[in-house]
Length: 256
Ligand code: CDP
Image 1 (tube, rainbow, N blue to C red):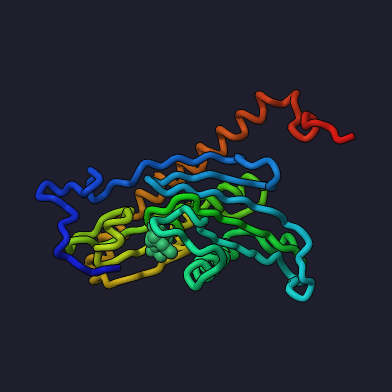
Image 2: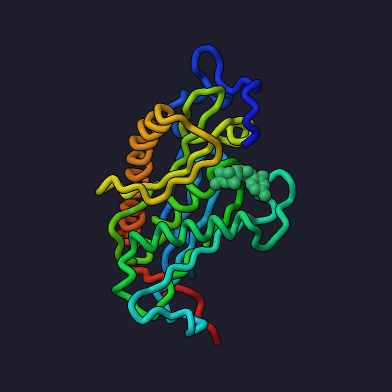
C-alpha cells in the first residue's frame, strides 16, 4: 500500500486505468474439477490473476498428534509459484504466504461441517500461477469451489473479493497498480446465504462512511461471484453426466 494519492488512477469520468468503473469486477472465470488426482479442484481467473486450488480429504491426519478427536482440521497451503510475479518469487513459504494460509484455513473452519469427520485433515492447496493483486480472494473463491467439488459438506460456498481506496474513492476489486499506489486494500469473504462476513482484513484506513460504501460495493460483487461459483459446479456435473459411460478411473492406461 503505497498511499501515494498523487498517482492518478481514476479519470474525470470515473474510469479506472483498466477501463472499469469503480463498482466493476474484473473478468471472472471459474472452472471446477480441473485436476484428476485431487479429490476436488478448481481454477479461477480474476482479471490477470490465475489461481489453482486442489483439495484432498477428509483423510487421516498425520502427524497423529495434530488429530482432533472431535472434528476435522483444515490445513490450507497458499503458494505463489516462482514466475507468478514480476520479480522471481523465491520458492518456499514466507511470512505473507503463512498469513494467507492461516486466514483461509480459519475461514473454512467456520463453514465446513468439520464435526462430521473427527481425526481427519482436509488439505487445501492454493497455487498462484499469475498474480495481479487480490490473489487471496481468488484463492479463497477457488478453494471453496474445490471443496464443493470434493463433496465436502459446508454451510455454503464462500465468494471473496477486495475493496479498496484509490484517489480518495472507494473502488471494487483492486488490480496491481491500484494496490501499489492506492490508500487502502480490504479483502473480504462472505457466506451469501446468511450474509455473515467470514474474512475482513484492512491494509490502510477507511472512514466509517467509506467503510459503508465499501460494503455497498462488495455485497453485490460477492453475490455475482457466488453465482459464478454455482455455475461452475453445475457445468462440471453436467459434463460428468454426459460422460457417464466412460469412467475416468477405468479408462486410464493399465499398468503391466
Ligand atoms: O494478492 P493479494 O492482494 O491477496 O495480497 P497482497 O499481499 O496485497 O499482494 C498484492 C499483490 O502484490 C499480489 O497479488 C502480487 O501481484 C504482488 N506481489 C508481488 O509482486 N510479489 C510478492 N512477493 C507478493 C505480492
